[in-house]
Amino acid sequence: MSPTASMLAYTILPPEPTIVGRGKDTLDLLNRLSTNDLRQLQRNESKRTILVNEKGRMIDILTVAMEEDQLRIYPSPGNLKNVITWLERFIFLEDARFEASAQAITRIRFLTIGIDLDEAERTRKNAISFDWKDLQDSLQNISNELFHLTPGLRQSAEAFVQPDSIGEVERLLDKREAIALTAG
Image 1 (cartoon, rainbow, N blue to C red):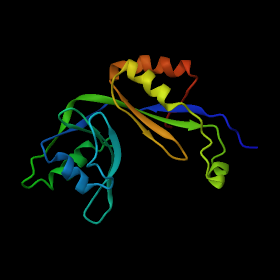
Image 2: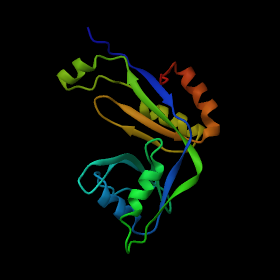
Image 3: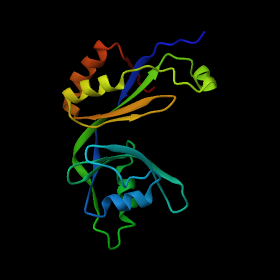
Image 4: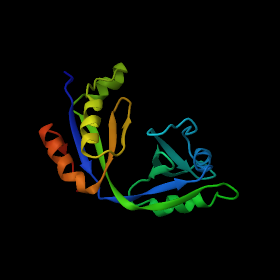
């Protein structure tokens, strides 16, 4: 018998700087160097994309957010310098600049658990019924940073919050009886 209820699990990663991209050609350059179509990205939207080398091998999985006058790029933990170096290799005449932000952001990864994923895959149905919008609204009341949902059969999401908001976020997740996952 497959469980139908789902629970929220999360892990909080250490604060890290993000990449700020500026210049009128920044989005176009990033679009050419990665796998997802970023050209239609609008202000206050985000997309996940894979940064690849000239042979199509993965450099990193990025979350790219369009802000008012710049791009905010969230690389994988510990990969900031590698991503900036790679992007800068391809700036020739483009008006594009990439630099580490002075402010660190804390990444929180979420995953819904508690369903029989094999059964869900077999029936090609998404048995997860988690209210991501409610979680997003609650988190944005605490810290107005990015919340990125990765939809699919095995639903997951990421939130990026100010490090000084973590205590409040943990209290919110505690009230929701979310399960904290730790590495080890």
